[in-house]
Amino acid sequence: MKTFLKVVGVLLLIIIIAGTSLYWIYVRPFMEKMKHTTTIKYDKELTIVLGGGGNSGVLVSDSLVLVIDTKMDKAADEFYKTVKELAGNKTILVVNTHIHPDHTGGNKNYKGSTIIAGSNYTSEDWKKENGEEGIPTKFLKDRMDISMGDDTVTIFNLHGNIHTPSDVMIYLHRRKMLFAGDVILNKQAPALFGNANPDGYLEAMNELPQQFEIEKIVPGHGEMGGLEIIETFKQFFMDMKTAAADNTKEDELVAKYKDWNQVPRLMSPGATIRFIRDKNDK
Ligand SMILES: [Zn+2]
Image (cartoon, rainbow, N blue to C red; front, side, top):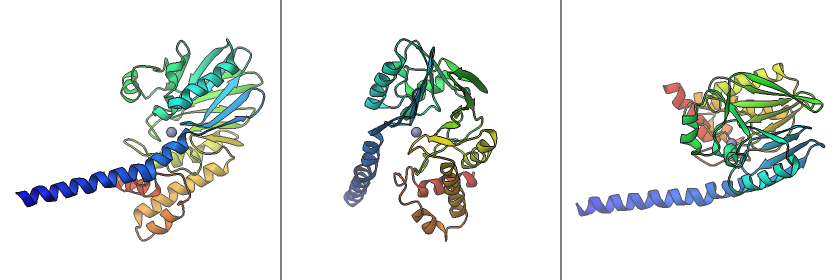
């Protein structure tokens, strides 16, 4: 009995040490990096704030101010200050690209504003993920178009499971710019949980350039750029599918993305491969 307890004790200790080191070596640096923000004054009306959670945009027109994703923690409050400075007393319309707290953490600051999210969530789903505050006031089924200054903004629901069961994107027609949420990331491994669907990512990335003339992409995470972000992220999923089907290629294809922002076992090429294999086994 004593030996058994000793073995259990040692095993527990190993698990605790491994978990703690995983946190300190990978998760914490990742979270620290995530807190950092970069503000890009793209033009007179459009400000893009990268980092601090998901990437965000603020588009100001004469009567309306569009806010895309509200960030998390302290960065969410700082971002809200920026929004208020830009918006003055104008009406603010918030869009959440999806339900995850790194994109919705600041919703609570926008009391009284319309908050739009995809329609495949209920307010109950929302409360479970994000708590009682900042629940969207409008769940978008298909798409809506708003005229803002000399641009037209299309907010659209991608339907079906991709990153989440209800991913929303925002396209600015004149600027030819797509705010993509976490369906498109720039050099960051995706967080795949629950109903996430790697084939859905590929379908969406194949269809988007046919639906819209895209020159600029603001991904959910990472630097903004052009269509090459889609090509690179598509290649990532194709490589991970290849590795999932053929484990002799796994090491090489995992190494190909070693410079990407990632957390081993959670958000990484290896985690993506395991997710695809588990999905195929079901
Ligand atoms: Zn995110």
